[in-house]
Image (cartoon, rainbow, N blue to C red):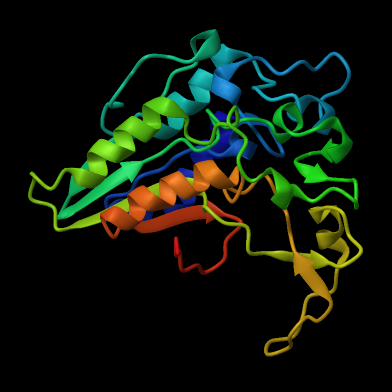
Length: 255
């Protein structure tokens, strides 16, 4: 793990030498394709290491190793606003950083998130966060009371941060691992994003016809009601959002 972190630093050191930067780990950093942390629980790997483990929620790697990854990649950040560890003693790093007139809320949007296979009906046939039953309409399950996105602790932090203009900051920015929407597309007959690496790359200016919006529950477009609660807080303080996964330009609206 550390050699990859060193390579990252060597590659971009000339940039970071002069520009303050904030880094946060994502799913691949903890050796997951996707991760639904479910409050830090252990993901069972006795039946396999891939999607079958990930879909049960939690972390596949030992908690000590997860903490090493987080320490390597987040120790430069301000102290967490609530340092209480989650399950297995996994540390948290969600925090606030005020710099040059900008107040940043740095979130952990994987660690507390529910695994869709654990809160949706079994007939959804979830595989790696994708519904495999073509007859199942996830829009009918918009409000799942037991589903979590950021978790109660982060929502309290975000609520307080959004309303706090007591410092010198004149602008608010949220940093997270993925955006609070799923706007990417897949072919109409596809049931997951697994087909994407084999698709031809469109030429500049070409428009891809016949695709559908991807119901990708690895994105923070799901769970929808929890997502809407987050967007309401972001809207209340006109926060700008920066995320690094499922990269697409977005404009959020809650009405």
